[in-house]
Length: 283
Image (cartoon, rainbow, N blue to C red; front, side, top):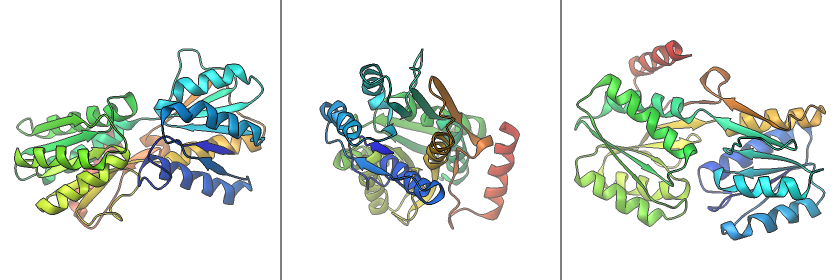
């Protein structure tokens, strides 16, 4: 199995890293061989896929929404090759492609509940990498929870138009902090590290994304978890059992443990119980 990574590298502390950890877990569980190819720009996607095909991989996985079109193009050029796409979907999914999708809105909702209970300024922020469904849905859920809990809380939001520009993430965060934000949720791949840095310097809280992020910065109170490994492992398991589901999409959500939130020492037992009860009622 070969992962074609989006820009940002395998150690992006976000999407690519989470996908690779899922692949490594599959190697342990199912005895498959796994590898990855990093993409420095969109122009490298197709070339990287062709490299993976030349390596005789049984399954090639496009990691991220931005690879959606290239995976579709490759699936037509190589009809006997099996592909999967994480965060990409099609009106008519090609018969040799399986889409691995997540309900980001539910993860955003979970961390929105936490932000609504922990803000003291009634101003919070959201910084996304790009305005694409797999990012914007985090904001949809985040805002929904906050408005349900307290209509007086203001949600500032902006996209960095990048998944790699940490300096831009920091600049946007600093601007939000100057507007009174005391918690900032960032869903931007490599952009996140700049946001976390700005929040630390200002002594305010931040919220991570995709994987448990509190390991990267002590001011991260929780993370909107997207358990990419669960979707990837299930797809690889199907492949090893001869049950690869080409032409289909699978959505992983709260009920399948596909999304959730990170529990950290910043969260009181009472808050965890409150959030869990709210999420249980949504299943």
